[in-house]
Image 1: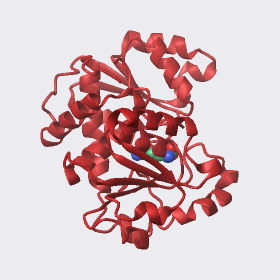
Image 2: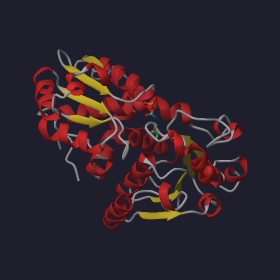
Image 3: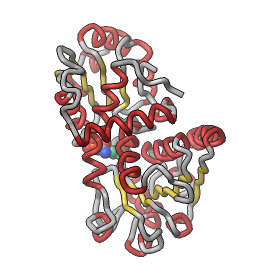
Image 4: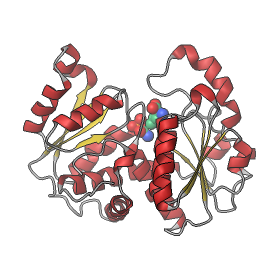
Length: 312
Ligand code: CP
Ligand code: NVA
């Protein structure tokens, strides 16, 4: 496996390896501080980022490499140079590329034309590196035996919902996406793919529009912003109305299992997709989850640049 373009690229063994290494990096961030010595990693983003950018830059630094951050408007790509040519040029100077942008197809094209690893740092369709941090956090709370547990995402059927269902499928988990029907439901192709993966791993994939039934006895309630980067502002009012039953309220949290946790990829909008009492309450693990963005990107860079991931 050269690239991490989609969550579905990862095998269960890859995820296990990455989670274990991330746990090591959490205990000892400088364990492999020469792994990327004399190497550079380009981080190219055409959308804003707090966590992914800083986690990536610090992960490269902890591995002894040099991060090179490039804003979307700074490359000749914006002036008509092709993705393929850009990929070849970056491959000549850098040892990996982390990209955040809109179209998944642009990331796929970069991966196909770059000779160095390309990592998806979020597209409109997927957010694979977030899910690695989420699953280290899930492991820290529940251990590896997740039989009988239910992992529930509530809200927009967006990139996070896709990644949530897909990673849950890979991990053999019972995952649920509770979303509105219609325009803000998850992509049917992604759901079908998650179900196909689930058939090989023993996972259960459930898509529902009933937030109470989803929350009942859940081990995790997870949510994301209602307006993603790039979403049309004109949809805000209609979308907010459609999503309001899926807000993680205290009442919804009270339906969950006794040892349940609340997760959010962040950034968060308190009193919109989640109640302040939940996100800032005792069940919230958001800071640890955000911290693991670095440990997992560090693990991913470490294993991908050494050619140690198999892919699915
Ligand atoms: N969760 C996440 O990807 O955060 P940023 O948008 O700040 O990178
Ligand atoms: N769905 C959000 C995730 C942010 C990390 C977005 O794409 O903006």
